[in-house]
Amino acid sequence: MTELNANLWFASGVFCVLWVMFGGQRAHAWSEHALLTAAVFEGQSEVRDAAPVKVEPLESFLSAEAEKLEKLLADEEEWARKNLRWYRPRPEELAFKAGGDAGEIRKRFCRAIRINPASALKLYLQLLPNEDQQGREVLPINQLTFLKDTSTWRKTKMVGLSPGELVPALAVLATASDEPDLGLDVGLFSDNGTECGLAYGFGRQPFGNPNLDYGSQAPFHMGFYHERRIVYFFAGFLKESYPECRVHLCKTLSRFAFETGHSYWGWRFAGWGLHYIGDLCQPYHSTVLPDVSTLRAIWIGGLSSIGVEKPKAKMIQLVSNRHLAFEKFAQIELHREYLKGETNTPMLAVLRGTNSAIPYNDRTPRDRVAKFSHTKAVLTDRTVTDCMPSKYVSDPYFEFGTSSEQDQLLDAIRSGKGEAAVARLTAVCCDLLALYRDHGRAYLHAILSESGVRRTDMPR
Image (cartoon, rainbow, N blue to C red; front, side, top):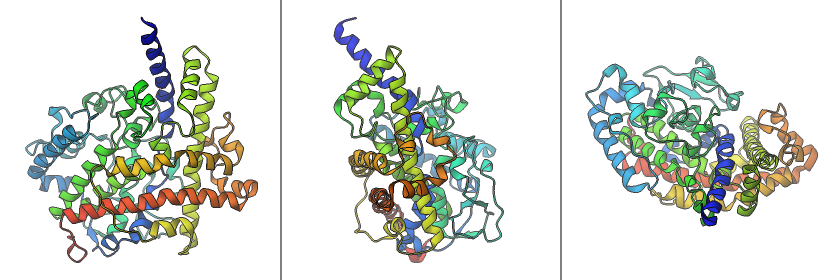
């Protein structure tokens, strides 16, 4: 092996060592996307004034539109192959066929769009902190997901719906925007130990930890589109990510559902797409190692490759803790603001606020959303480090993700760092929430405009 090849092999191995473990520890971006989405679209008349929608089982929608869906999904596959450079084509045997086994139509659809066929896809609503269940049955979270770690939804109330029931479009949209985190993208790679992972054609998991409960969803929820060239040179596998694919697929399905009169699924598919846009608004999902230089990452990874593991373990733990603490801060603050019921609370005010109409196109997730959040990565990481108790974000021997102190984070910040620290963290959050507001609204407006749906004639 030449010296140059040896160096290239070494550096590539460094990034592999870092990312096989690192990506999977932070596959969630925002806790409870529904908190964001409900507020954003209260402020968009297309949703606020939409007619109530009739709840419809997925099987009913699929059976009614099977022939058209066959062509729609074939066209979607062709689009992905032409437009997404790192896309792994769907195996032909998974193509959706109208004449297939009617009893297996739900499973065949899941396989055709390559989501986990064990996904519950039940009829349900995810309630806001101040929302009444209106006599509906509360569903345990384990009826909605096969995931073992459901701590994100520990304080979240889910209620069941019945076919034919009329529900607000906004509630369907907000609920669906959190649904991909319930396991839709888990277990889809060939090394994930699942039948669908072997069948779907995505190959081995490019980054993230394939052994963690939700770690395998990382390549679908993270998009590292704006790293330095040297990072891609040594770690080309970071380009192999699928948020753009999911955003476009959900837009296509949502538009089709509206056009064919299945408005419940129009809103639900749109909510799925909004989830991935929201993920890209998180700097920890658009930046490999915020505020860690490439040279430092290579050095630490190099030490790991010769058996010196402690520096790598410390870096992984610190970045993971900062991401999770930032996410928890936003979740706690949004819960608090919803429960207060006031209109001038900072995060909800931003999410509900007005914005100038902006265009949406297929490059928006990469060129505008992920790019903006990537530019905020260093500021976000430094603000978290400065404004949160050092135990939570600067102690590599502390595991924030499993700590019983998570729910007291906001109180700990106030008592240890003061109101100024809360204000700084809130300001950083608000910048990112405004990004979701603006581009989330643009995304949904594009769907509704292209499908010809107007406020006054939205189908039930």
